[in-house]
Amino acid sequence: MIRGPASSASHAVLALLAALLAAAGAFAQGSRVEITGGRDASGQNYRWKVTNRSGARITRVEFPHFKADMWTVPPGWQQHATNLHGHTGTTGTSGICTAFTDDSLVQLRDGDSAEFAMRVGRGLSNVGVGAVTVHFSDGSRVVVQGVELPSAPSLFERYLWVIGFGIILLAFIWMGARQRRRSAAAAAHPPGPGGEVR
Image 1 (spheres, rainbow, N blue to C red):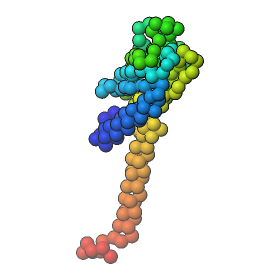
Image 2 (cartoon, rainbow, N blue to C red):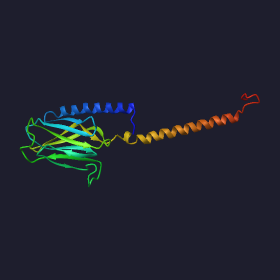
Image 3 (cartoon, rainbow, N blue to C red):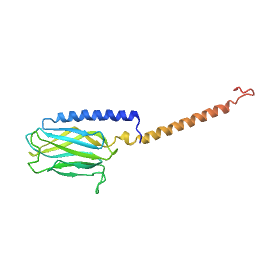
Image 4 (cartoon, rainbow, N blue to C red):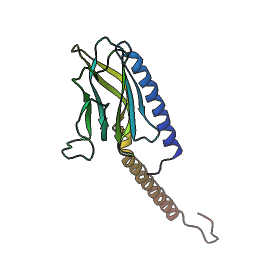
């Protein structure tokens, strides 16, 4: 699909808004955990840096996704993902990418950071903001809001082609009715012998 300037501008505004919200979310949970990063310029790759600001170690993180096909975790961590796009056993388009470890040597201590990455197919998802759940060694957890994540297209975007087709159809109906009115008016007032309309 070819995108016009208006569409590109709207996507740029949405991306900027998502980035601002992501930054706000990181600060909102700054007392226990900070999450920075998001989508790169290609639109396919997401990378986040998770930093522990808590006295307890981070043992598990859960990133929601829409049509992600790859999930990468730090060395020493284990991974699990539901509904990775294109993988056997996929039952939907949305899922959760989870990274976890029982090894206290690789768990994130206060001040430690680690990177987590995700890939989505080109054009398969939009950038949005959502919530990431972080679990700690003391059994507590926090939900970090405002993280930039691959998200489903909006209802408007999903039905944009239907709306466009409907507008074109209505335009054809209107033009046809207008032409019929003109033809009826011309038939009701035929030109006189000299060509003038009577």
